Length: 367
Image 1 (cartoon, one colour):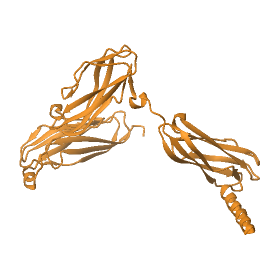
Image 2 (image 1 turned 90 degrees about the horizontal axis):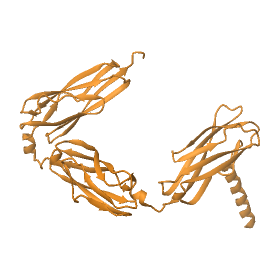
Image 3 (image 1 turned 90 degrees about the vertical axis):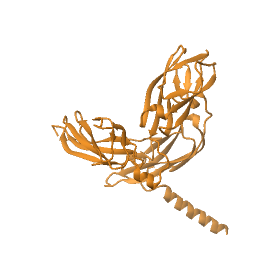
Image 4 (image 1 turned 45 degrees about the horizontal axis):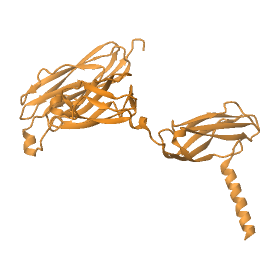
């Protein structure tokens, strides 16, 4: 039995050795397990060493990690027979707690060969999450104050809804700081009354309320650089950004109700200008007809950057009426395939948001 066990062990060693190396590059190992790592150490590095065991010169032609979180370094020189080289793998653990397995593809070629050979190196381990601090919970810094965010998003609502969003603020300074005022748009108010005083190393919350009816706008609506005035000596003015997606409200409708509702019909949803020269001013018109039985209201038209859209000749269409939207696209300074969109919001309950598209292949004069 002992003899049989030795034979099995000897045969396993041969098989393992064949799996670990070929007759060109002999790696000490192809898999490295870091075991337990700490996220606060930020990076973990291991160097895979190998030796040219062939009778010809060898060089690495390609070293590529499986993702951007792993950065490789490697021997760039040609290795003579018997010389050693390395592939060093550095894994960025910051913000990546938990188990990981990453690979590095290594291609190499022996002098006289016409094709590369390939081997795969692997690093793995488990990253223990770091203890979190104030900067993790309040990543946005304005002077002595830290915010959990400076962009407050209210989500998706209708023009009859109200939505709430909370801003968390921490005073990391040594002096009490007073939030004196916030220059909010008409549609947004706060549940808390200003001014608000924040003691050193203490926090507070401000809950904002957005009234969809008062916004008087539709689709993705933004309010940029809303000023918050404080007595912070480092930076008295802070700036907040608000956004919300607003769509028209429709009550539950039966098939009979839908048959009576307004209905927007577009003559086309796309327009292709074909090949044009850079610098041309392109224009096209989209027509909208109300095929419903109640007035159709065009609540908003907007474009993606790079083109402009005119106001509809009529914003309220009686049943059977038609109006047009003129779209202009300036190709100055552009080249290649261009695609732009026009968003149209109406009170058609079947499809209140319609996306129109224009496209052109812009060619520069020298092309």
